[in-house]
Image (cartoon, rainbow, N blue to C red):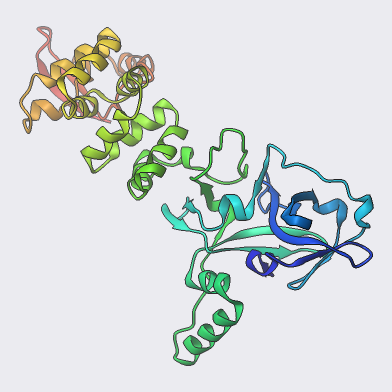
Length: 343
């Protein structure tokens, strides 16, 4: 095993032993469970940034030097591809989402697996103290870990596998992350909300912008802090904000609208569909902290003399955005409530 910090700054030698630069970064192809290192970036003469294909040119590597299998005169430089990410630039010292532990962490180092004498793969991110110490000085890490072990408190590595990592400080619209892992937009809305709440305001807005309307609406309903929901919806234009409110359950949307200024709330409501607007306005008519304010306006009623097949047919034909149905409400011939059936 080898770490990114152990490779950074190492000399890059061509096949004739001539130094042509120093390692500045490694590129990976992101669509794999354990992504291969695909590009080597280095600073050439005069600190000129250069990039070459790892597979085509790298002969051997270790903690001291990277040797190429071609003379400098035969090397052809390349460019970062749309599906590539640079480890130092895009991941190291950045915040990531650990989608297994549902938390936001900082990457202190990156662990690589030397599967052969020439091939490297990214295993995961080191988010613990050992990675931080190693990035400062390998000797310091060695000393501190020895002392900790002698005192009976060994320092363990804290590695998050690439398959459980999701980037938050980069526009991912053109970057395909590992096809095998559960990314941010696949998490439960409550988990997404929890992650967003842990970020600073800049990253919060950046992550929120990566979600689609349905995902944003789900997260909005799960925020513990109403002020945060107001902040995020305040950063959207009126059309976007009204679309998100339309995606939310009426009771959640009404609660959020009640926190907005009167002018802002009216503008957003008028941009919504008649049905959604009417449901929210009805709930807003109830005083705050009353049952009426937190109730939902979406409920399914069935005449008490109808069959089970009729009830299932009604359920199948509900709109996709209808709030989760937990009860069927039975009504008599005058339309009055006569009972409930739990689902």
